[in-house]
Image (cartoon, rainbow, N blue to C red):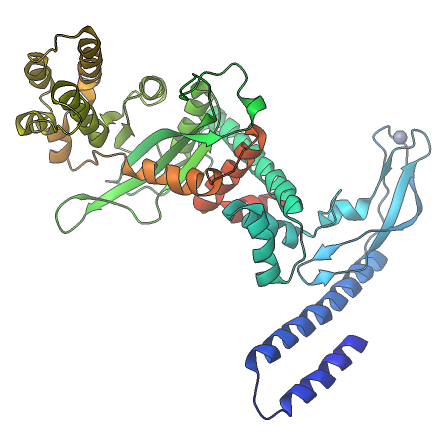
Length: 437
Ligand SMILES: [Zn+2]
């Protein structure tokens, strides 16, 4: 309480000055409020310890544990440092020890309060850890080291992943717990894509990549999103429902990712939706996932990827600056892929290398033809572009994990991806509440 007398003295001194310094007043009072709050919080903890019901602490071996006296612990809260000491219990038999108060307060093996850990996780998920440390100092007056933020953010990320995979398991066994409110005429979109995350050398052993020498620098993170669409915009084009997009992602096999994607779609109302649309870029594993988990979905291959392939054909035939003839583009938009392939196929180049490249491109159209009925999709007011998931790859993964100089461990990257997906899907508060219930 001495400190607050000091604050009051200072405040009086500041107030008597001729020119007001609003910001100095603010920061002084904020500091005072924190110090006062830390004092009250300390008293609250002591009061709780003295008056809480005394329980019998049993060891895993069945023996009763007895108190071995109090041990002090450093504790940083959002109000600042708070003095804290709690009883240490030990088993006479097997010497196992524990701190029951730490368990009740959710501060097992950590010196950070739950409030501070939440801030660390959030800040560390948003920006580079050094920047996060500066942000937390500026916004919350907390002195934290970057590597501590990294450690806590990744730990919380792994808890998020565990929470999600529990839910996924449950979903796959018994279906969604509560049926989600999907509008009767809502279309459910499922879309996924991959993006490279730069990883440490030891994460790449034996992997082939896109570097000139065949080596790899990155591992593919797969990102999936689910969103709904009911209405149309002024031009009569489909409009994504506001705040309807949720994300899942990880660096993992396409098989595991398929289940992850499926569980998320179930959670979002896959069973209720009358129209389900899967939007992909036409990569082979995408097709497998759609066939395995979403056999009733309308599978659409992104129109803009298809355009790119058409441009590649034009470049093979007529050089780097060439564009595909309008007639071809019209056929693509009309979804008349058979005619498009016939028409373009007449121009097969003579050189073996170009011919091979050209046949590969024509093969792309032949393989994906059933997913390219663009005229029909437009008629039904479906989205035909995978822009949502591509933007998701940038915001969810790229902006945080692909900054210059970054090299991730797969474990660390997956923790941060889980955290970001959870936050950007608006589910972080649910997760946090679930930890203590
Ligand atoms: Zn024991």
